[in-house]
Image (cartoon, rainbow, N blue to C red; front, side, top):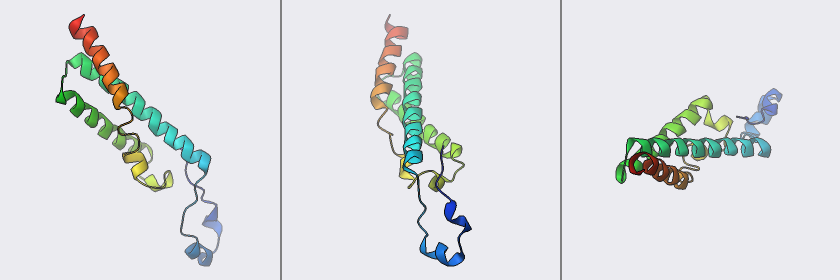
Length: 120
């Protein structure tokens, strides 16, 4: 993941007090958001296949989805070295962004794997 611009670190203390807001490169932020999107999509597909193979139906499958997304959030936070503000402008980006985005992929692969294993 790409971090924020730390070029202001060599300036004097007086200018640091007025420039407390970190600056982020737009390209780095876009790349970081792509990484989150692709990671959540991939994990939702894997979670859907696992839920289908294990034969989860109804609420248990959705509980597995939210569990997989929570584990993905912890994994992405660990990948960022638990310093979220070095790579994102707020913690919501890594924890909540795209949380429901992979739900359709999860359901698609969940039903596909369930049908392949348990029906056919």
